Image: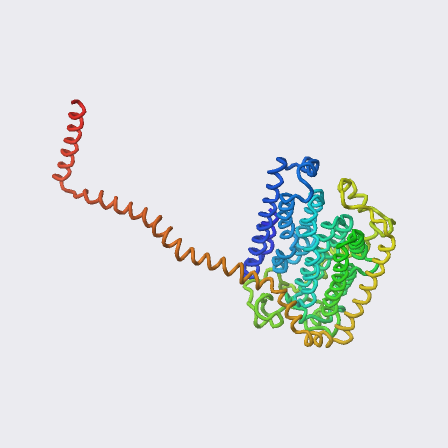
Length: 531
């Protein structure tokens, strides 16, 4: 049902081919995840004979040996479901395309609710994942890879909503890595704070897009600080929280997560390091987005807002995901104005509904972290989760104040230094970004092409399926189905009807001959039977 709801909402602008294609893509990938989830559940049911959570958890250790192959397979299949729902590699390609849907949809289900279902699933089945450490390790590694890959793509995306979409993938990668590594408090704490600041960023992005008349390209945005002061303030609140800037909500949740992962020791140190590399990526793509949209000389759309107090209203609406995203003249002209500023030229920032939604999110993005402060100052999240994870055999209360202090300092340094570097690159020395791109064109191309995942799927999944479909249509369907089955049965009917039609001559003597012949056969039958 969730997948179907996502499909319908992503395809809401049904007159756009890109929107309907994105909806189908989201539905198909989520169905693949559903298949994995169902198969994994069947593996558990085959061995344990029950599906009730209480009975499953009670019999987990007695029904399987630790890291037994059948349990590992079941958990890996369930991970397929978690990865597909939460847009983790390699099932992540649907989420950026899902930005075709209305921005409030992106804010709610594609940032705060639906896409975190995989995190909940892994946490809910923690007993099985702890008893199958191989599967748990796969989940943690995939989460770490996703947070790095998605973060790197976010560094070069120029579509405002897609930058936030890749950020969502990256942050969920943190959560998947955390709960797979038994960092349950940090994982679910970050899930909560992420819901606040990411929903806020999507809503604020919608406000900017509204003022831009539907244009979503960062290349066309600048100078919205004065044009959209309320939206700018919300972007700052969400940006600081996403960047894990000291004392904002994301700072405490991300630090808790990475601290718990690092406290596991061993190979988990690799995940710990990956988390801090991803933290630097996060700061750069977040402030690249903010600096490009709100700093600099006002673009023509921002000037319209400043001078008239109304949103920019283009002469004709175009689909920003067709043609050159920076040149509306190359884009497909919309046949409907639904979803764009109407004739009244109002824009989102001035509506009380938008402010009523964004103000609470902004406040929570700033202060929500106080419910789980370091060094045990507050323990609301850990106390809330304790009954659920009291039976864990892996997680423990890390008692390493030096590691926790080191993490707080490192997070602060990364956030502050990366923010300063981003300011230097995109505000003080705006040509720096182009110079880096010129020196590392291969890296920019890799990131811009999204690590070629879509190209790979197009070449090795979509193209073969299309070829098989055409072959089946041209050979099997036409020869076997149309020729033998449908054609053969219709041929038999035609032959039979032709034979029956042949005896319908309309001549009385012919009918009389048939009657006499029939009576003669019947009489002969009874004579033979009486002998």
